[in-house]
Length: 448
Image (cartoon, rainbow, N blue to C red):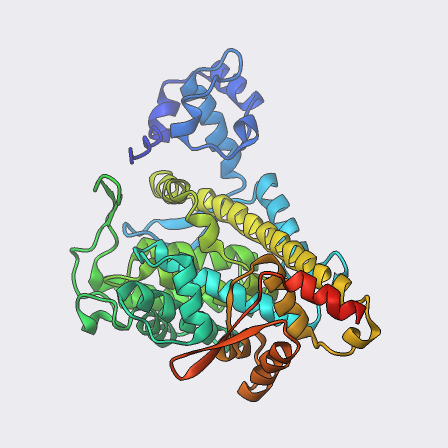
């Protein structure tokens, strides 16, 4: 990746401008040129307003933004305080996330029941575990990884182990959401995420002990970022935890969603571990969002969105680092990612609701069948109607719906007794398959 061009030094720009030209610049000063929070590297490629040069245009942008910027109690490796602005575009994103990420998880039929909500949570935990690990090199396919997590079998290789660890860590964070964050918590989280996946097993759960850790472009090997020296990491980790635990009385006020994103950013910037920094950063983001009451984010996968456009993520980090520690670039990128993740969740809910409604319409034709199936069996039948030939295991069904083994086993045996699932033995366990003519069998049962 080509590094962005750093903005010209502002004092030098001012030296060459007359008072008359400065007045013209101020007249058109705007923190959002062309409606966007543009970095100099992007702005210099655009057409400036009439009668302004590129440099004069940038002077106006910097002056307009200076009134919006607030200093954070976080610092870069040179001791410069990171800062952030809240332009209109950022405020709009926060409004939508406030509205969409702290309320009820709903389908077109209304608020979802506990069984549905839990099923979506399990699916999202699996999705985030898989894609977060794939972002850092896990090569396991989604289907194989999902089968591993749902069935509970042990990981077979490093890629599967990364995914398994991430799943365990995400579930672990749900139980920590009401606790005050400490460096020890972050080290424990890193240990869970990286156990049995590192070249040196001693690196799991400890800060890096060397300064030969760099951020490189995986495509061409170009150097993108040199993190702070390892000797500074303990103090930087303490400061980061203090920031994570701030309440609404702290000044400047940092919106909870922005604080969660900044935790993500700082782990990436400090790179405190030999490996696994990205997974740790994304996991802390989820912890912070849950701690602030944005419970719906538990059902989303930001890694799924980030994996589609990794270059945009890197560029947002580089824009922050090259423009006076202005984190607004990264904040805006992540807010867009969050909104897309929430949108993907709603699409997923709509799809799953449609599947379940298909099964329910068939089942509703017979009063006898209406009383025959519970919501777990209806969900399985809806899934089976769309994906014939899929295997269903007792342990997988148990994990998906968070029920005891005997309840899950009876669900599947009852469907087998009705001829809606076919049973076969694999090893010491039974596996159930939906027949190709499942819809016809449901039709016949509905008519009987």
